[in-house]
Image (cartoon, rainbow, N blue to C red; front, side, top):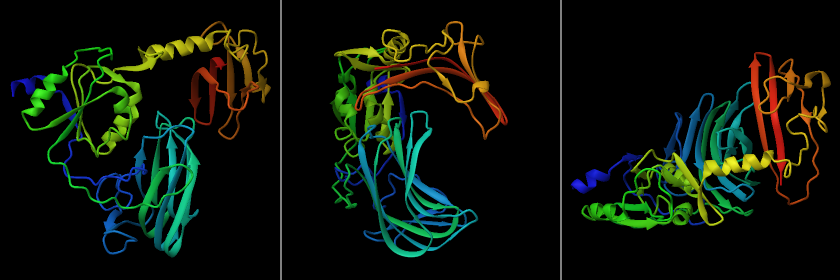
Length: 394
């Protein structure tokens, strides 16, 4: 086994056991709570085999103040329509001061983990029998992932949840527990195999892993970058382990499916370099560093030939910009990000604010992107922003 020891890197998220195959149309795992997979549990949450709507058990939440359980979904596309649904029953949900309830909700987050949108599609207090609720929504343009959250907010009592689901489209699909498929014997591995991908670090040959794993009776399936990016091709129901043998290099398009795989309990092995330090994307059929693509986009945004905001650098005194509170919005020669001037906006209190704005004409269905550079200094009760350059381009 010396060949195996020579190529081993770091393995994360080791798991065991078998997980039922999920319904192809569902973006959720374990919507019926028949296994322990998928959901991030919290104190006060448990599985109940006595009080359930279907199957063997439901999710039960008991609390004197509040608790929530969630499942994070990465396989979402900004602008697409999704529909969430589920069932809840409650017993003696008593709101605390300010109001409270048992709830089902959809939260949307950007790449930095900031919430960009949230909506409770069920809020119930008191005692009620099993009640169905659904919610159709569009994925926010800034959303990187969403979370389906259920629980009790600012209240005491007990709530049970069952048959949760999340599907693409505007039509709700009630959760149907997938038939337990016979677990394929043995450990199943997939490996990123994209010969054209530029490698920063050392690429471990496919055959090295094939021989080492074959000696242990482990099957190995090569996946291209596009196959790895497809959640129907690559997921934790099909594979137990992903091997990334390309050093620091990794295809950007497969990032979300990898996150979903790890959230589903998949294992990860990386070799040959500092993993994920060199993201690459396809541009005009060629692999380019993602960092270089961003640099090009920023340069284009600065180019006056493409800019939709004529004085985005405020070098002409903010021509075309409107200030809602003139005393708090000024163009200054103070700490500019570029050039000699920038826009300065101050706020005297947390209740008050001020802003510069520029009105653009756009066409329905058209695409624009923006670039903003700013510095921010804040103290309790007030704040200041310095905007160095702003541009919007087609």
